[in-house]
Length: 337
Ligand code: ACO
Image (cartoon, rainbow, N blue to C red; front, side, top):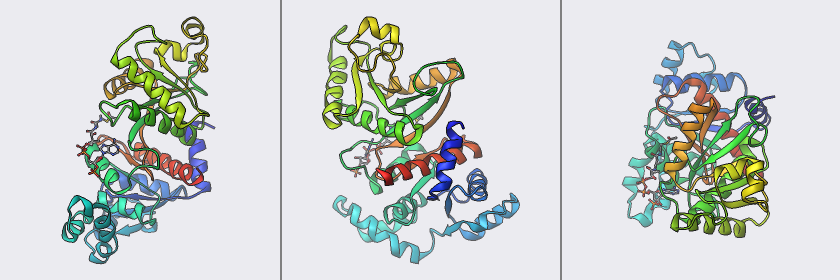
């Protein structure tokens, strides 16, 4: 079984309720129909019910009638969820009228359904920008206890015969959210990525905190940040197998590790790579993807108290389908934690 077959099986065994705020978007509806027909998750679509059903008819999607449809224009819906938003944001100076207005926004309404326990996760971004999808999640879902920062990981699925990581999988982070993390944020990104490795990749994390220096070979603030983050991450989770600061080759090539850092607990077999900034992480994942023929799955948003995942606006129904499956597995992982 490949990774997605395993994730699909797990999702089917523990069906989750996934809310799709872009309910009137054709690629989203197509993915939702497939998820329902394969019995992978319960789907909640946000949008005008008439519009959704007319589109489903046009697209010949017979399973959409089995989805729950929530109309963001329905004032009884707003009556239920706006007070939750008001409570969450009243210290920011919003009034109930503003809370009601925001609750009409499907991205917020979906997150509020998750917050209220009426859904287990949200997938959006086929129409909305990353910033808008993330902001709703930051404001409503908020972060896990002990974590203040949401970050984005990619699962890098290596071509057959390329023996790095574990089972041909490496986790890269942060590649999507935090432009310039400080050492505390970097430590938290390491811990969240370890969780993603367990919950989504199904591998036991071996975390490398990457730099242009290996164990003091170079000096400076950028190196110190990674050294401090490694110490903090160890304090936060003493059982985690983690090491830094390491250059990428010392992290993933046993022969190089033997020379540069013979005492590293990773022994050159890291499977989670933490980059010192978003610029490095984002560039690294795109280069590895393009030059190495590697499949990059994500970003998986990590650190949120309940899963919300963002899509590319250029996505295909297949991407939405897979993101829903990943979201189900994150929800299952968080509940079992
Ligand atoms: N984790 C948790 N909470 C956060 C985070 C975070 N990483 N960032 C911001 N917040 C919170 C803030 O604390 C604030 O909360 P509050 O309103 O309760 O006080 C709220 O979110 C809004 O904060 P802002 O500083 O106003 O954040 P802003 O909305 O300006 O930016 C954003 C957030 C959009 C995620 C920004 O960090 C960003 O643009 N990041 C880069 C995203 C990107 O372009 N990635 C590359 C492309 S993705 C790809 O290639 C896969």
